[in-house]
Every structure is written in structure tokens, then in C-alpha cells.
Amino acid sequence: MAKHRIILDCDPGVDDAVAIFLAVASPEEIDIVGVTTVAGNCELPVVDRNARRILAYAGASAVPVATGCNRPIMTHERRTTHVHGVDGLAGVGLPDVECVDGGRHAVDFIIDAVMDAPGEITVCPIGPMTNIALALIKEPRLAQNLREVVFMGGAAFVPGNITPVASFNFYSDPHAAQIVVSSGVKLTMFGLDVTRQAKITIDVCRQLRTGGKVSATAVDMMTGYGAADPSLHDPCVIAHLIDPTLFGGVDALVSVECSSPLTMGQSVAARTERNLGGRSPNCRVITCVAADRLFALLSSRLARL
Image 1 (cartoon, rainbow, N blue to C red):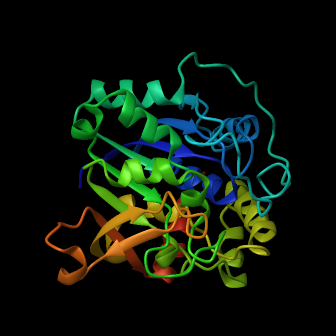
Image 2 (tube, rainbow, N blue to C red; image 1 turned 30 degrees about the vertical axis):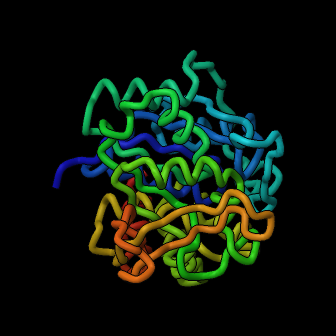
């Protein structure tokens, strides 16, 4: 299997941190071209600092980090969540690092990386998709040069987690999500349909805690975070790139509601011939996971760090 060259677009966030740990611990399958940050779980300066702290803690300080957008496309309002704690990492106290400005905005970093390696880069947005959407707008050739977008967000056939119908990532910037899902890029969606099946349990934490410093820190984060949200959403994206046999799904035509205040950010997924109305699916929607195998993979890989 060919190695995946990825840009991990994130808003760390506990589950973002575990996703980064998993990617760093899997060099056979994952080559991290860069990490880009976006306001989401916390304000932009916090998530940017967290991304650098997480990489340094995992021994990957050399991975470039590019700071991205601090607000959604169509509003100045920044939506954040408190489930990750005040610092975004459940207060575990990761060592601080010097935050050096790399000089390029995340949008430009994504464009440059993809256009320099046509057909090679997979972008993995695991927060609001503002950076990706603006990159697609700024560089119209980007869509045809991306290998794939594998993202965490949406709720195709299940209720939302921030409103009755919307997931946090889509609700935080629904216009960005719609731009991405309508871009024509190959898409794989890890929404709440599947990520809610990746439950953080006492047994999972016990298994991970035996793996060393990084694993133990991940457990400390997950324990605080899991009290409010016992699902480990973002690492599913990375696990899929490592071992796609962990997951199953369906092809669907996905769109995002951007107009109605009542259903803002809702992901609408059409599957049947009648609902498709002659149109073609645009997305592989992941709906199931072998959770025991997922956490076994996570445990074995984090033990390497």
C-alpha cells in the first residue's frame, strides 16, 4: 500500500491531539507534510500553540505548522466548545514550546504543497473546513490536483452533537463544508455516524496506559474529555489511512444546509436512486467501525512514541 502524504488540518482539541499522535507514530503509512490550524474547539492562538506542543511532545517538532483562519467564512462569530477544557487539552500540562511564525498562512501552505505534488496530497480536515474551502476558492486548480479529502464532520443518518441535526465541525462553518463537499474532489466522510461508535471506555484507557509516556498522557486527556464526550472522533480519519479494513460505509450525495437557522450545518445525504434524482454520489460516508481493532491499533502505535 502506498504511503499517504497528508496535511492534517486541525483545531486541537483532545481528539485532534490523539490523531496527531497516531499519525506521528505511523511513519510506514503516513508522511505528515504539514499541520495547519483553524479556530474551532478553541480560539486560534490556543489551537495553534496546542498543535506545536503536541508535535513536540511526540518528537515531531520538525513537522511544519501553518496558522490558518480565526473565523468562519460568512460570519465574525467564532463557535468554540468547552468539552476539551480551558486549554483545549483537558489541562494535562504539556510542555510549552516556542511558537515561531512560519511565514505562510495555512491556506497558502495547502495550495503550495498540493500544487507542488499533483495527485499526491491527501488533506485531512478534522476541524471546521474554513482553510480547505478558501484554498479551493483561491486556487481553482486545487481540486483536480488533490489526491483526496478525508474529513471528520457531519452527521449523515444520525442526530447532531451541537444542534439536533448538525455536528460541531459543520455547524462551525457550514459554508466552508458545502464548498468542500461540492468541489468534485474525492471525499471520505467520518461523521458522527461512525465516530460515536469509537467509545472511550475504562478498558480502552487501561489498555492505552500501559504503552508509555505519550499513551499515558493521551489517557489523561481522554479521561477529562470523555466525561463530556465519550467518543474519539478525529483519530478515525488517521486510522482509516493506516488500515481501511477497520471501517465500512456507503456512497452518498452529501450537501450541507447553509440557509435555515433551524438546520444550519446539517449534512443531507442522499443514497437511493429516487433521492439522487439522476445525480451521482460525491462522497464515501463511513458508517461502521470495528472498534476493538481500532483501539488495538491506537494502543500499539502510541506505544511507539
